[in-house]
Image 1 (cartoon, rainbow over the protein chains, first blue to last red):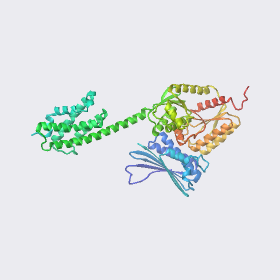
Image 2: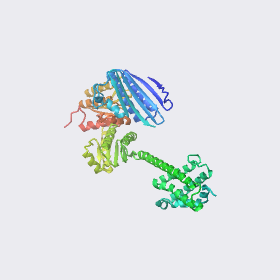
Image 3: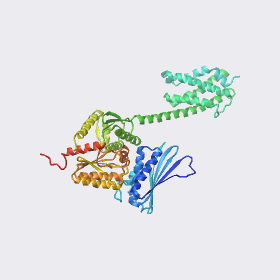
Image 4: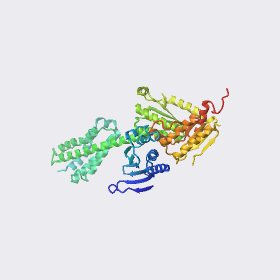
Length: 148
Length: 280
Length: 129
């Protein structure tokens, strides 16, 4: 797990950004990713309920990586600007990819023996979510922002 | 030969009286306290205008005009708080034009050296400042009321051991529904309550969306091991919900708070039965 | 390490740690079912006060365990869920947790007792007619 401020000369003045990277290889990594996202959210002032939403989302997505891709990486990007605080969860793997996004977003759909609520649940808990997938690379980004 | 500033200063009392006479009809009579305050504030505006005219540098964007603008904004904000309409407030400021015109006619026999144009420009500028200040104040009031409503309209009251009451008042939108759910669950945990009575008598409209939020709240409370009784659903709401085919089977509903309270005690007694019986 | 299950009279008690792994949940399910099958208990109370996250996998495992316990003639109660966890589960979807619930461990034990009584007694007892 590494923590580093992302250097971005353009908006270094207005924004304070921290990235936390957690490799996802074994089951214990799900817990680690969960704790990191909760910690990052708490650090920039998200409330208990939002922290729980984020940790749950990380748990869902990290488990998906273990189930479908084997290994991958979880990045928790936290930003603090004068107007808002935000967290972006990025989950990347080099697995086979998701066949049909539209189907995967329908409640009840699953090929891995789960309830199939993973992605729709993530969508409901977060403000915004995007999926980029092809065989060999899948990137899911989910974000949550609150006014300060 | 007097300057415009000197003319106004010499006739300060007359100008102020003329101005107060032009106060929006009901305002002066109905609210004497407001009238007194307004008299003082308009007097200060007159003094600052005089100071501006006498200073000689007639730049409407300059630092010398700033105190005049500020005073006009203060008056406008006070008018907004006292419930005057924007039209009444603007009319009050604009009437300064007629007053100075009458004054100039009387004192120097009409317009002299573009005095009137100068005064008119000042009043026009003040009208704009007034309007902006008025809108700003109103918005501020609305925002503060909104926040106060959100904070105060949903208290969770412990009314008996293990029973809390949460009366909902006002429109329930998605954001508020989330907030209500959060507060209710926190109150349940904090008060160690087994039963929550959610009284919706004060909610003007209960449609399928509100019903969905209520259902979710009931389910979340169930997960904590608590029960929710929804009271105060009006006949109108009941008709709507049934016609929309909303499933409320998971929810305990009662017509009035009184009946709901009786149900709460019944449920509590039922729970206590389990407590006294030994499982061993 | 397996999550320990305590036996208090006819009720099984277990408390889930916050860092519960998927494997531990699965083991717990097996252990609890074995104890109920052996006729050692009427019910199971799972305390999740420590759990700060219950995702859809955990929710499904818990609901399934409850269903299995019911099929075997017992009663399973989930106790002590945190408000934030309940809120998140409800937002994720309807009926994520399909089992009896209680406020705390004590309430859970009482609930098992009440449900056993309403059913007419312990499941290994012959009613005296």
